[in-house]
Image 1 (cartoon, one colour):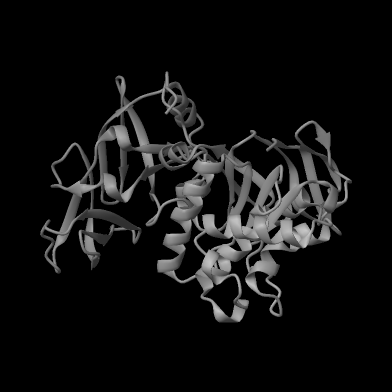
Image 2: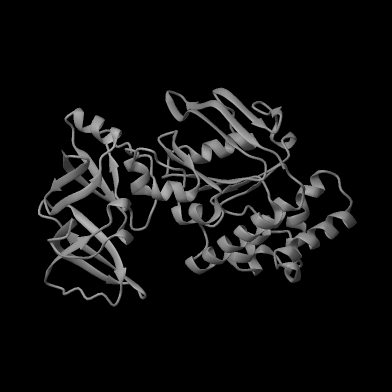
Length: 370
């Protein structure tokens, strides 16, 4: 295995920058996810690691080697594609062993190694079948087996689970997590699915319009999103975002908006600086941090019930504030919510996130690492 490093990498197509001056490093044995919406630059970044695209500027390192202009076959990487890219006329054994064939390995060695990898991936009894004779989940494992059959320095995944149904995706995600812990492979995994990224990655690089807006462990991405974009993209439902006006009362911060009254938040130097600019703030609260309350609570958000969705062990309650903004709470199913009533929810100030007028998170004074 080896590390991967981008040094001020830009990729342009004509006048359009698909990737704009990004730098990051993937440690040896680390599994990172490039996460973002369509067109954010994540797949272009992956293709540059593979050598399928060449940077317009900057440098790409794999281990100690500069591979920026190196041919793909000389990079010692393996790649799993979204559509699996299996040869329909070959059985699974030959599909899996194909990377060994092009490297001139003997038939005996190819078949032995293919069987070893297939057994690890629980498809050893399917080696004589054609891709059309197996399920989507088995095709995905075959594609993964082909990537693993030849020792590589880096493994690349381009949305490999996106063609699976929900049940198979969950199963395959767990299997990949197990495989990573077992092998300790260096992997770069592209996805638009934040749940996949949270479940698989040691760190996540959230991308937007060709740039990395936050690169951190999943728990930090979730609890301390760097921007309102990250807060909205990561989480299902996403973080509730409420524009508010702030005032200082001694060493405490008070926030007000339609249907919002927050009276117990600690003041920080960042908040003072943001208020000093005369611009408004945005209050962010995750749905699971809201609980049933009253309009007299210290930190309160209220409005008229809009939707009450039963999800089994929990339910999602969405309500509309006076200015039309909607807020969603995730609560226990047993908590009673009448279908016609106005509702009020409360939250602990420790779980509140504040963003400045530019959409950047305002850190607390003396903030400790998660």
